[in-house]
Image (cartoon, rainbow, N blue to C red; front, side):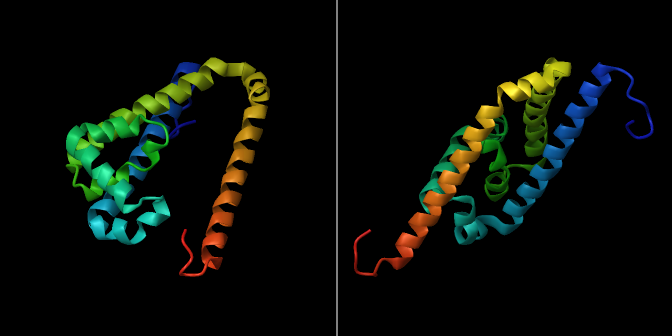
Length: 167
């Protein structure tokens, strides 16, 4: 059921899932753009470390936006990992809202329809696919835990270091 209408075919289910994902990504990215547009560069300079955004990284992002123009949004939206962080810089660098929205919608649609297609292709054999990739899930979890432990160790070590000791 979707808005009171029954989804009676797999094709309509595919479309409904892909559109829901696309709209969800779009709404979230519009919030990110607004944060960037209204918070501006001072927000990223003050809180950029939360996003692992150093001044050098910020300068590279600004140069990338300058070179690519509006297409930086589309390229960022279809690039794994980057897609999660492109909205705030797009707002900061004043990507025009209508074009930003259109390019984000297109990039998100490609991403969501692609994932929905993978799910549809897996179909009834999704359990077999899930079992085949179980070990990949373990590797990802262990990698994240190790990275978090290394980050914590690095921060603790940096705090304990006297001010006159070299880094």
